[in-house]
Amino acid sequence: MFKSLFRSMKVFSLLLLIIILSGNFVLAATNSSLLVYSGAGLRKPMDEIGESYKKEYGVQINYTYAGSAQNLSQLQMAGEGDIYVPGSQYYYEQAEKKDLTVYKKDIACHIPIIAVPKGNPAKIKTLNDLTKGGVKVILGDERSAAIGRLSQKILAQNNLQEAVEKNIVAKAATVNELVIYINMKQADAAIIWEDNVSGVENIDVINIAEDKNKIKTIPAAVLSFSEKKKEAQRFVDYIASEKGKNIFKKHGFKVIRSEN
Image 1: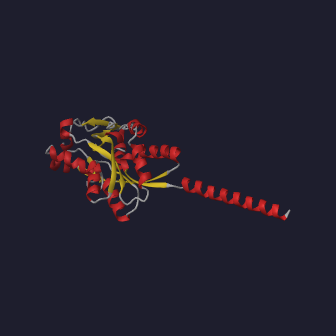
Image 2: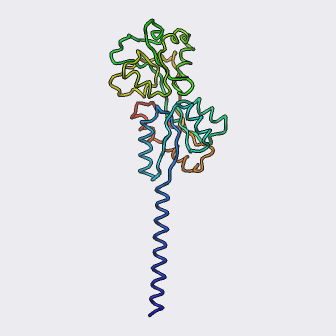
Image 3: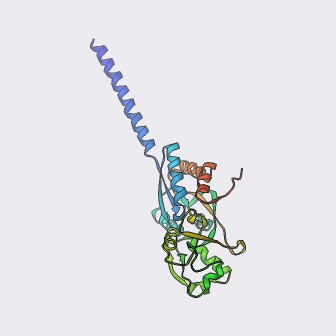
């Protein structure tokens, strides 16, 4: 009888150990996560993609949103994280030169436009109108935001940089701040990404002529110091998948067609 009881206890203990270990395994899988450095202007699609990915794979996606240059500096100093999604190819190239990336996919296009308050009180029609006397212009800070650096390039290639500079009333660290300024009528015009004002009621869009504009590519890249490269690559592929690109499209982006 005692032997039978002892055997039963051993079986019970073994089963209990299996249950505990299984529970720990499930908990570890549930608690897995990735850290993504993303341009602030990509918050809406990236948040939605993160939620969708978590539902499918049980992986928590944690974001650090900031200007592309700020994120690049931060990830270099921290030396940790898994994925970098800047607002333009330029910042990816800077990261690549420093051997900070190991895998990349192109996702969508960022198209600069002129954003004006509803009704366009300053009657802005073209880039040249940003030079008119009395027009209050706000731009992204070229030291931190991809749109800020690009705005300067657009103005320079059209020989408008010096004339527009006289009308600049403020510079913003992120593209989201530009949206707030125009939405609150704190300026007459800002150069901003088209997708960031998609569906914003109090902002009108003035398109920039294609031959005067600079359209940029949004990439997603795995960081070389990531300790979860396999999972990070799967998330980058997910962003670049049809499902991920459809989310970008839903939020006003023009996506890049898959190579296959």
